[in-house]
Length: 278
Image (cartoon, one colour):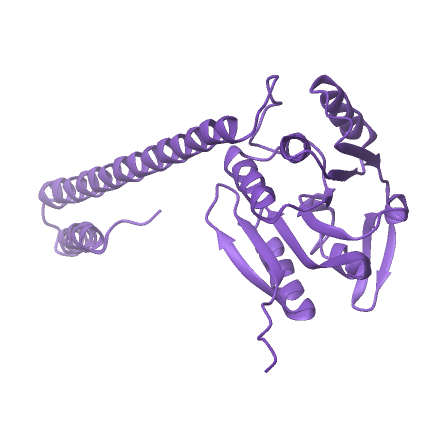
């Protein structure tokens, strides 16, 4: 945190004057009372200026957090108005998807009407997708989780909300995965072998802390199963790694990229529109 430039200059002027006066008084054996008082005054002014700057900084942070909380509350209200939720949803934000991302997820599903969704990282987003499928009476989400405990928790929520017809959660352990441009620990995707064309991907796993570009392998590994009009929704793109992954995918697979300024960031990728051939 830095002082504003004019505050810095003022504080430095007083301190420099105090130091110069103190040195002068010492060299010429003069009374040091006045230089000491000037020095103390300079220090007090510097402290006061820094405190004022700190108050402004804290006020700005509180206002920023209040606005963020308000936006998330708006998104949560919109979500409950859009999706016919019958029972309380699990806690959101933190490690879980935020209300604004779930709202974007629901609107994306309602706009593109995918029939098959594959999701990495199960949770409240799995329920939202399943509710959307139930609402327009068709479709299925297949969610992968490398932690058995989290997979079982989501299965329990799916049963609680009576959405088994529209959602399946696989426990998909991480395994060594080799690609042309590197090695990763990534989900065992053999559980998806019986699934046909995938219309939508929801990317929220594995954890970013696992390895650099942790979520990159998904598209190279599933490229052959993606439908021509596939859409890909990525969470957590406020982080550099996720944003870098989206950029690499867009370039390698000729996808358009649209960013959303959500709490944790989101990016939507889709096939590039083709010009009609005359």
